[in-house]
Length: 93
Image (tube, rainbow, N blue to C red; front, side):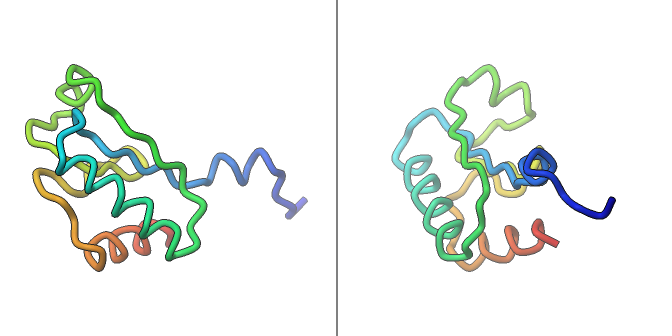
């Protein structure tokens, strides 16, 4: 008891999704997300979602959007590095 298995650690890993169809703003957002994750030393799983129907099904009508652990955090603009750092740090708590 009291120990954490590798499987449990994997389940706790933050998941960051970038929603966008591949436009320049979406690509810039992906680049910034990866940069921030690396700078913070976060082992988050970063996933790009380009399927328009899936994006719409999540209630997102403007891209790019950033989703962290299933919750839309940024929508319709390329995030600033500091903005994204605050959001990710808050999600780590």
